[in-house]
Length: 150
Image (cartoon, rainbow, N blue to C red; front, side, top):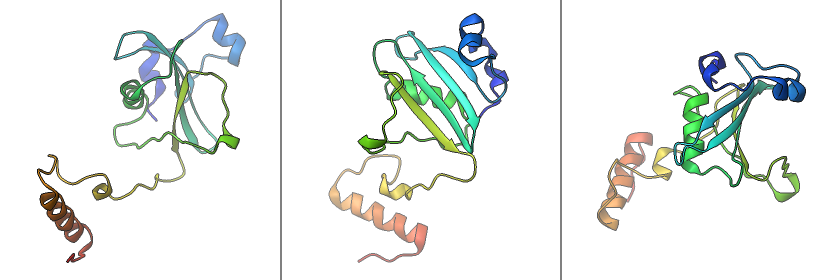
């Protein structure tokens, strides 16, 4: 998580925040208002770092934030080398405090396990054929794990 003092220009202050949380936050937590990179509408962001988790919640007044808005919040509140995630828990475990809020999470106790990049795709350009995609996949597997395919 970034040091939130670097984002003071976005921090919410005043009676509403004091009544809600009892203080206005510090370098690890607080409430912020940022403009959507999509339509410049205000988005409320609540940030915390405690209990082994960095947490950023992003909400809008009339709809959930979209991918572009969540990516913007991720880049603003997390360091460039940090991975954050959204969780899709079973319905029985849903906690919903706001109908138009999404969350980003990052454990502070260790890295988030991630699949190999090849599971997402290979190369910076889309393959032009199935044969080319298979050849790129096979080459990436050999490079990553020394695995011979075929």
